[in-house]
Image (cartoon, rainbow, N blue to C red; front, side, top):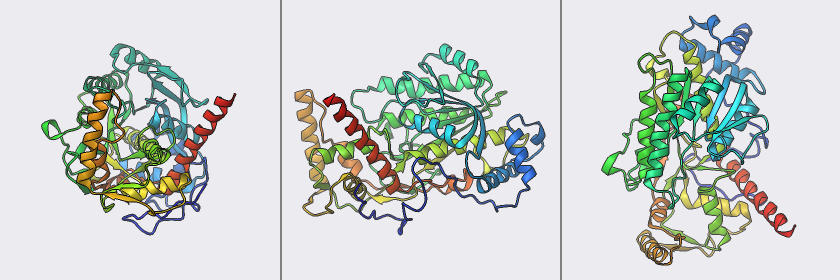
Length: 445
């Protein structure tokens, strides 16, 4: 594999991608705790008993959070958790199967279940799987009552940019399906629910986002031009309103990832690689001065499990955390913390895939011309009944500035990316290369 070209980013210089992570591992993130500051007896107590909770029932949340932080600093492998019984809805999907894998490989769990509409792909032999349509409330409730999870992680959603998916499907799955998940968790006595929202919930798809954080309002109704984002925002509100609702013990939070890519990615990475395979990688739209946040899927999975852990910690305490410590009832932006110029990211992918030139021979189109060509492509696509390879939406997105401030996630969730952008690119490109090799071998057989 060719080493990648330099990625210009807001956070230069980058760490050496070869010095931090071994392939196939999920290393511990650093935290604010001081190693050795918590007695080993307390660590053992937390590891062994906190899910059942009687021994820690009088501990305030900030003490439990310090214990969790110290655990992360002091142990080596499978030290995270415990998470008890974990259900990942959408567990065979792109993000969901990464969460299942990390939960099994790097956390202490009693059982891990993947729940999906179909469970044939992306299976982990150490997990159990159940097929279920989350828009069937009775079936979902029956399943949750059967599995008896401590935590549910809800990642299921239609693909955002698939023109074949109508608004009715987005509404049915993202809003109605999420309501079914919330209802089932409440009725079955689930302790914690983590919802996969989207960073797009604060975007009107016209205005640039510069260092945006959780204080920015949701964009709803007529201001929201993408119905997918409208339904994700509506679902997020449903989940957060269910936190500590009435007599329910359910604690909830939402994760807002930005620009997910990696192994199994059918949108970002697949799309950029397809541009390379079609020989169109010598065209750039815009001046490439727009910073963009892309996030490796392993880091997004990691953030969900951190949130799940801390919700369970809170559930084990009789007191409510201080506002600045709260995970429950909160939303968190998640990125790689490496905003990068959009076309630099694409070129890094192409370079990793084998293209050994930088900007040499690149043809730069003005943004307005690109939008015009996108319109023409859409018209011909409609006439011919084919999906256009170039769209106005894609051109606008590739020339917008969209990066986020993840200080809240770093402070409250103790989140720190486990993989750099280049490491994520390497892993993702290699995964696609392996798929191509397997398809070629199957064609010859």
